[in-house]
Image (cartoon, rainbow, N blue to C red):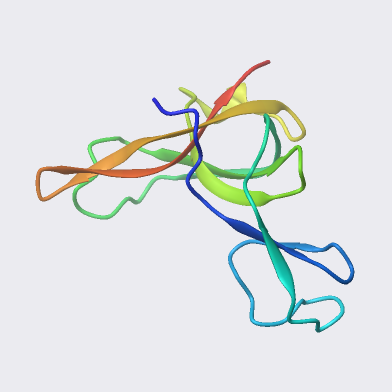
Length: 118
């Protein structure tokens, strides 16, 4: 499990809106000047769902995914490490990590995972 989250978001230098993934122009003010920022701290769960009809290659019966907002306003989607959707609630604090999310051709594929803290 890694503490460094290797994704980059972009903050508009004119209005401060945070974009992830990259957009050519700011969605608010149309500026083209951005500064790169990294997600920081824990995150707040904004929305979540369970996927029961997974594509071939997944060993789980279902997959919990969600969108969370980091302390510096970066929003990102990732898998949620919980046994049931009943363990989750909107607004709860989740701990982000960068770790394997599945195997493809015998190799680990890394992605964002969230672990509930409450």
